[in-house]
Structures are given as C-alpha cells and as structure tokens.
Amino acid sequence: MNLWKVIIIKFNEGGPFLTYPILLLLLVIVALFVKALLKEKDFSKTISLIKSLSWFTIAWGFLGRTFGLIDAFDNVEAAGELTPSLLAEGLKMALLNPLFAIVVFLIARVGIIALIIMQKKKLED
Image (cartoon, rainbow, N blue to C red; front, side):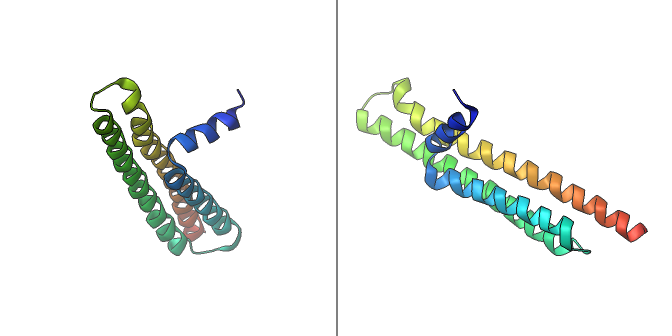
C-alpha cells in the first residue's frame, strides 16, 4: 500500500476533527521557520510563536486522547461487554493524536534550536 494512503488512513482513524488541525499546525510551524530563515534578523518573536504553537499542539493531541478514551468506554458501555474490537477504535484515537502531536512538537523544538543557534551566530558576527 502507498505510504500516503496509509498516512491518510491513520489520520482518519485518529479522528479527522482532531488530527487534521495538528497537521495544519505543523504546516504553520514549518512556514514560520522558513519565513524566519528568509526574512528576519531577530528570531525572538518567531521563536516565541513557535513555542506557543508547539505547546498548543501537545494540548490538542492530548485532548484527542481524552476523546478517544471516552469513545472507547462509550462503545464498551453500549455493548454491555468488553471485547478487543470494541476498544480498538477508541484506543487508536487515544494513541494516534498524542503521537502525532508529539512528533510535531519535536519538529518545532528542532526548529527553535536551529533558530537560537543562528541568532547566536548573528550576534557573534
């Protein structure tokens, strides 16, 4: 199966309402990083904005985890018994959203580190 199809399937399994905003935040963070590289001399405002967006991404991912767990327990409650298939859908959402949010957070942090290093080099010159 094509890698992009697998990624899209996983995004949908994580709940599109919760997963696609994380993707949008990733794109915004990358765009801010590129803009800073191309235009800015002082990176402090961009660094601050990327920090805020990365923490928001983590919060959004863990909100998705909470919804996933609630959904999993609702499925069990509705069925009246505990089976692995009833828990699977909710647990996927509970695991996929924080995982994706953590990946975005780490990408943002690498970008922040790069901007800080570049800013220090500019100050030294």
